[in-house]
Image 1 (cartoon, rainbow, N blue to C red):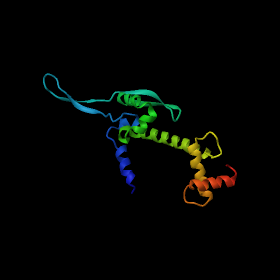
Image 2: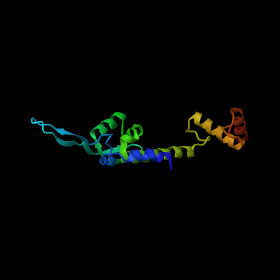
Image 3: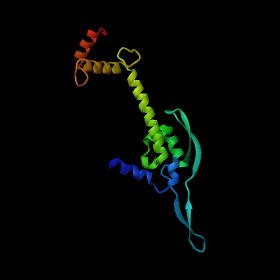
Image 4: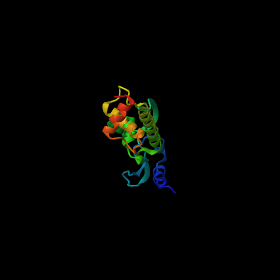
Amino acid sequence: MFPSLACLSEVISQPFKRSQSGLFHGKTKQYGNNVPFSKHKTRRTWLPNVQRKRISSETLGTTFKLKVTTRALRTIDKYGGLDKYLQRTRADMLGQEGIRLRLMIRDKKDEIVSAKHKTTNPKRKNLSPMSQAIDARAEAGKALGLAGPAPARQTIKYLKSQGIL
């Protein structure tokens, strides 16, 4: 149906279900044998070192109580925080909880960026000169009926006709 659904189903159907409820950074249950002196092997498992930690997100401004492996904690420290860890890590290493947090952070950043673009106005003084020029050229292009931003000379003529310059 959709090509992205096959990719998403691979992420969702990971063999270690417990890792979907936290940030396990690819750690899973491991299997092996106990081998005593008699060489009579018995099957056993090793579970990842999972801790419950409160980790704060700078973008969202909240603290999350998560199940995290010590490997994931080290990686979070290495990347400089939860937000950067979620941005840089592959989806198959994050699991469902990590993907959910990544999408929350991405949505919040998109809201912040769109709010900045809504407030941009060439008449405002606190914008950088380059962003003022780009906004002015885009506005002049719309007013003159061009497909894109207006060239510099046409923009200057337009701004003078509007009484801005």
